[in-house]
Image (tube, rainbow, N blue to C red; front, side, top):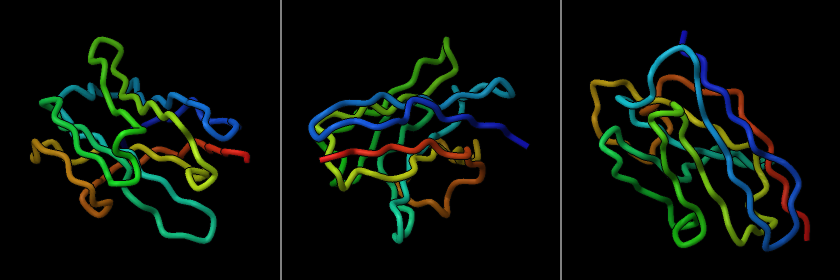
Length: 125
């Protein structure tokens, strides 16, 4: 069982920033595609951004221009930097790993096999 851990969530005011981290001590993230997803209260989980093992990224329209996904292979960590946060960004944010047989990431949660427990992000107005 892969063990992903998200961190960095918290309470931030409208327009603020947060940097989320996703890491594991069990395996190397370098060869996997990683996705960030979020689930707001009463809503379905949705894709935010993803990064392929090659470093290529893809983002949902809601994240473009405000969120940046990146990875540091030396630290075995994937980051989601979020700027200009809005109350509608309030959600539990999850990272997930796609099977290594797929080299590219996709913005579909059913394509990801292993998930972290999530970290809460709350944006106040």
